[in-house]
Amino acid sequence: MLTVTEVEKIILDLVKPLQEKEVVTLHQVTHRILGENITSGLDFPYWDNSAMDGYAVKYKDVSMASKKNPVSLKIVEEIPAGYCPQKKIQEGETARIFTGGMLPDGADTIIIQENTQRQGENVLIFSSTILQDFVRQKGSFYQAGDVLLSAGMKINPPEIAILATAQCLNIPVVRSPIIAILSTGDELITPDKPLQKGQIIDSNQYLLASFIQQNGGIPLPLGIIPDDETALENAISQALEKADWVISTGGVSVGEYDYVDKVLTKLGGDIRVKKVAMKPGKPLTVATFGDKLYFGIPGNPVSTMVTCWRLLKSAMEKLSGNINYSPCSIVRGITHNHLRSDGNRETYLWGNVNLIGGYYHFTIAQGSHSSGNLVNLKGVNALGIIPIGTNLIEIGDDVQILLV
Ligand code: AMP
Ligand code: MG
Image (cartoon, rainbow, N blue to C red):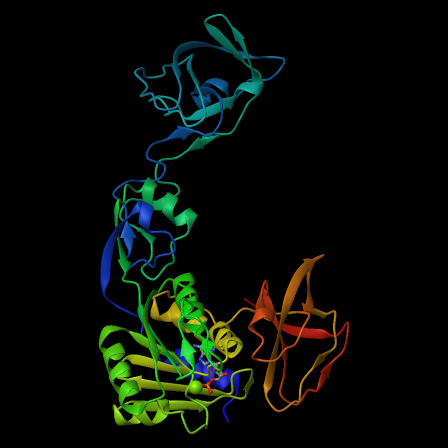
């Protein structure tokens, strides 16, 4: 059986980042992935401007100024931010200037107002300075034509501000991946139906749709498919036509009704993974149809969730075109409970972490850790990991924690 790390690598290697692009507006671009490099025709700063409230001066006028021998300059203009200076500063002159105000011609340095005193039409300068002090030079942060943001970058608030500043209103992004979802099982009903004895309500469809959405994909929920080979074959081939990936739950174990692998092979899929040494979630089918991936996940909702968090999250990031996708965020911390495993598979126990004094502290969720106990997943923000070969991690010991 393959280890979790091996399967993670196999999956990531199989994922082909989407190439097709679409154009969105500044209001729609949050968390999207840039489809092209962005350049601007503007320098940043756009022009020389003042970093402080003060006076714009000629350096050579004030280079010898001191408390004892202040220099008096004539104020010829006032320059708030947004105003275009009308006058050129001559020897012995200055302009009152405010933060962000455009530096007037003839001036090269800002004296902060704390080192000055106003005297009617004039100002006294009390301290010498260095040339270009508090001047933000045109193009010193960025020069027009250079790459401002790179293709494959995820757009968060700082990048949106940069796009706005660059007057980039229509932004090329990678199109969002479409992921089809199938729930397999004769026992399943939709949540709106009255529950008959023996039936199970399909929660995975909603869990997966939400997970896909949360990770920037477009879920395509295709409903419940009975444990019937022909029905499954039709559903899977339709799903493959419509989506970039297909995720089905159920039907990948070794039971008599578990047809998924058989149907995948019949449809020409190449099965790359059948099982992973992970608990919960041992049966896991990963198949390829050209560039498209098929994930057959076990039916238990807890297994479905843990498999998504551990193996599909990074893969989805890569599919979405994010060049900075990373393998899962696994950190180290201290456990507040004994963590037990049979030691045969890498075991994931769900719970919560708190960051106390810079250290992660893991507390296991109360209640049964059966993979059937979906209710126990509420509010979980982390999974404690017990490696293969370890039966017990004791209270206070170091533990690996997957942040989810
Ligand atoms: P399977 O992997 O098909 O053997 O299913 C394992 C368990 O998960 C069974 O108890 C199923 O009833 C349950 N299960 C399967 N699919 C779903 C689903 N979509 N939503 C909730 N439970 C499910
Ligand atoms: Mg089933």
